[in-house]
Length: 346
Image (tube, rainbow, N blue to C red; front, side, top):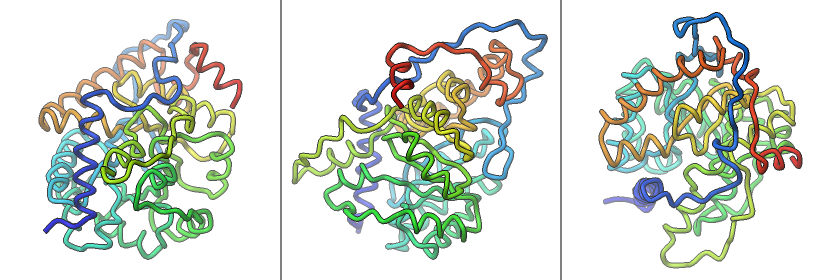
């Protein structure tokens, strides 16, 4: 029999797919289309000169994007994770799993996460828990999938939007402890509301291996939780709260932090990936876009989409005169007025 937690995971999958299919995700601030690439001087180079590799989390990655955390914790999600891991393995991508808290409470759900390592045996896998979990739980989540890193999500907005969510958020000391004791690199991650410069400075001071800005315009778990709660209409209105992914990356520039940034939130094309890298991300990830292709089509369609991204990236980098990912940060760009206004005020 399905548990309450596994039912919630199934509802997350269904609603996330519906939101992306029907374009129901809320708009938070200017998106990737608010950044235009400016033609620079000609460079003597060929597409074959491009090296789209990136170094982060103590490892080298062939591509500056990966499959972001989506699901786990139910029978339905077991197949989704298996398919995602198979595609990641074929395409040489890293992959994160959804929050593993359900499997820590119900051991029958462990297989829905472990299948990812089974289908991607040599891949770079990222475990996932909330920021309140103690080091013992973090170790268990890492062991569950033999993870190479773990992301701890600071999902205050989602929790407040969830009828059964947490209402106590004493996270900072625990994050510091986990970062100090974790056997693998720790990522601190938002889940759809982005991060401003003060928050980025505060989190960077904890010395995580990376910060994932988790900006707006991607999958909104706060909206999913409110839609899922059919019994009680949650009066909480979060529409004034948050930053888009591009605003969050500009906040990272303003904060001048040491921690490398990962860009997630609304990345639906390789052009979005390039823009995020131009704005200073060390790597990027996509969840909703990849999930929508998998759920409405099939794994082959998702593999084809990733192949298209991998073909286009060196060509776009050649267009911009960038032989490396680091070179992209030097590409001249124009900001639309609303994004420039946000940048000036941050």
